[in-house]
Image (cartoon, rainbow, N blue to C red; front, side, top):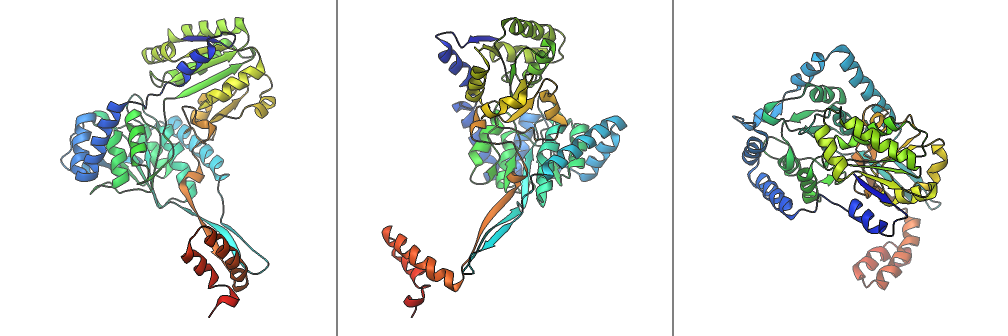
Length: 433
């Protein structure tokens, strides 16, 4: 774990070394991903089956074996214990209720001369959702990716999920049934992204790919962007906890480790100006690691990328938080509402000591697919708005064309675009022949 102090003359260098680390900047990974993407693009199902066998240990007699039938989703849902099923269904209901508030409608208005302007909002036709399936199973990611697409009105939702050695997770399939996923394929990695982007004989091409994954998935999404839309380039999980000392150290330790247990390259950062509180939290993390099931993963994450930053006061805490622009920001403070005017960059903000990040991962309602790596400075959580497209509407009246045509003609001539100018001018009344 790294200890930083804003009073240290070397703080800026240490901070950059900690924060600017980027696992995606790997030329070897990019080269391997490009080979995979090109192979799937060029050879379709044959390449997809080869890579699935090589990387996931899943051999198939035909590409059709890569699709999990719809009745398997329902069977998985019915196989869950009643309390397990109820938990999934309640989480889905809360996620859906939250995202219903994000719906937006087409709109238009008319000007005095009869010209009508507006915006038409339509759902995407087909989207692909990537659900991780390597180091852990994530039914919560199924809900978070599929439900806003369903709320948006997407016609077809295609899910891909790796199934190492053919091991299918019942929770993941059950979540797909609840969330309204239309088709599921047991493929993962860069090959799954390529299949969704270009389509194969079996996997249909989609309009947009969403969902987090490892460095190979992130690199592949970056590579196919333009052919399809993507939500974001997701990096390792992050949490930033700011505490004024009002929360029990043990609570905050578990909050920090909730991200560290995801992956060895996940990042957990703790900020406070209370030295005794800082020491108590560090001690509590060490104690929690001794009993954590995924201790080897969390320990490496905490040792290599975890950090404690000692700041001077609340204002400095906010300044550092805005520089970090964390995926998850916990304000474990007495009056979190008063902090909001000074917090500008965060994917999701958890307000108060009872609002742990884990609630947001599963059941609170807001989406847990969030910007990472500082991209919360300019990016937002996944939402219904990611699954719609907008078209501008322009219907000029004769009177409107007469007025606007004169203006457009002048501007077009100023740009030296004669056809533009004449196209506009021929709608002007005294220019018509």
